[in-house]
Length: 442
Image 1 (cartoon, rainbow, N blue to C red):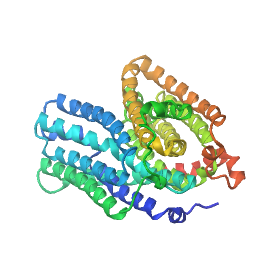
Image 2 (cartoon, rainbow, N blue to C red):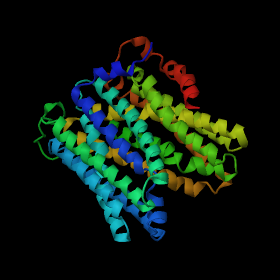
Image 3 (cartoon, rainbow, N blue to C red):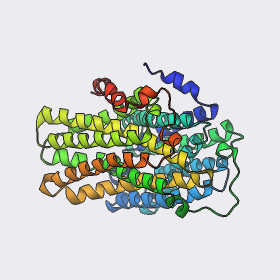
């Protein structure tokens, strides 16, 4: 059965389409500056080497605290005002980097930007969760993943061209990029204010009045706690290693050079988008617990290929590494939207803001723990313990699926049960499209 992305897009409500369109602009802006902060502060502004490191650390720490705060606010207030405020704070923060000519200026920008960006993903997921059906919610999270990756990748390309050869001095070009990123946040905030003038809480419900909700209530629900813990592991073995353990392991012994490494990152972006275009709608008819298990198996195979690539050299190593990254990217594109949809289906209106904030914290925790783990284990036996450990963690992720199936409500595990035949053959749906992705990705 062919997949028509435009037909899927027409299934969305005007509200969901508006959120996707606004996030496309916002993701492009984020891509403009995504790879550059360390280079900008260190080489362009000429600040001391500790300042970029401190800036990134402060930004990450503020994002964790800010994300928890925004989640609590969303559970108490209508989201229209919250999403506009979040976008304005994030826009002001990234815009401040344009004027970061000293340590205090850089750290101030880090605090403001960390506070704002921590709420962006939380409020967007909250808005998607307001869809009328579980199918639309699942499709919205999948489409958002594809839009984010495609527009961020486009932004990275444009940002690189401007930084390298745009008009004006180098410092001026980078300042323009940060101001442009800030402008996209402000445009997003204004668009939400105008396009969603009557937005209320998801499902039209009013804030709960039977006592305050708390994060303990989120973690006290076992399925939610298991999902968040699993999401942390998923982030650790994928996002957390893509820019740390994987390049560190492949380049330590000279298996893959800079050109081959660049190719693996290109594969990651392209495959992430194509997976959603080709499989995003079909996955809605596969049990979410099964998708989780299939992802664990794909990732275990991916890291086994990376392990083999590190023992090779030249073209063979590069091709094997790209095959591993391809499987890793397919798994990412499948599992993260699925877990996001499942978590929002399980979380009630009373705690949905906090649940989405905890989702952001889980992804961030895995993304931070990944480089720490890589730094501690890569020097041991040429990185072999790291890759073996990652394969073991992926196997554990695969085992979570069957355990979850026994506890999940049927309509949460399988949001779109028709047709039954495709629900019974999830592996065929995944592997059947893999050759298409491989051909396109390479």
